[in-house]
Length: 206
Image (cartoon, rainbow, N blue to C red; front, side, top):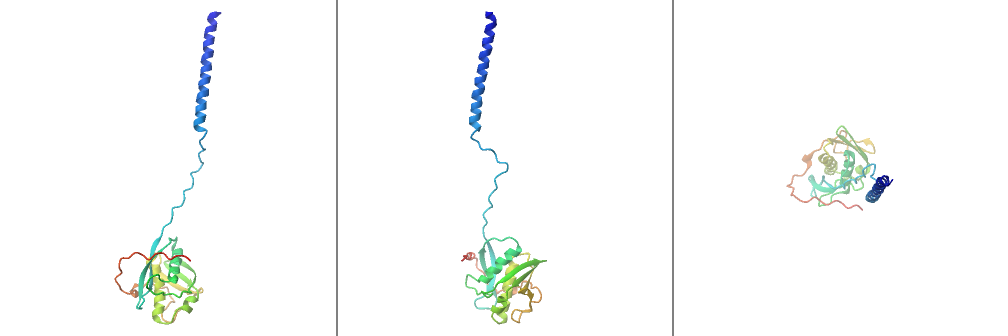
């Protein structure tokens, strides 16, 4: 009987040791992973990259007359030809920041723009026609500051059509035929040697 009890006692000790070891390992496992947050089912959305600025070239009238001159303008980036065209038109209406002269009446507004087959149609309000001073030079400056500024900065714009309150017009002031879309004409730009200068700062919003 004594010989049968010894092996049973040894087996009980081994079993108790295994149980203790399992409890210790289980505690360590829980301690390691209990504090971890569950993994997200989808990766967190990345914030959109901060948009910068860009430089456009605008055409305004030379102070002493005789054609158009360029002014570089730093503006906010835009998306799409039509949105960019509206931004450029707004900058032209705001007028130059430097020493050049405005080409459009400050009361000018536009109802919208649309691009079709390389032709950009601009629907101006009547203030463009009514506010523009008389004379062929003022009319040429107004029209080609718009056409050249848009075509120079936007490769998709090949021609520009002028409307007023949704209707086609023959001329603004009786000098330049506007019945058909106009190609850009950089020969109206006054020839000068442009120095390498820093672009004019962005206009501050009121």
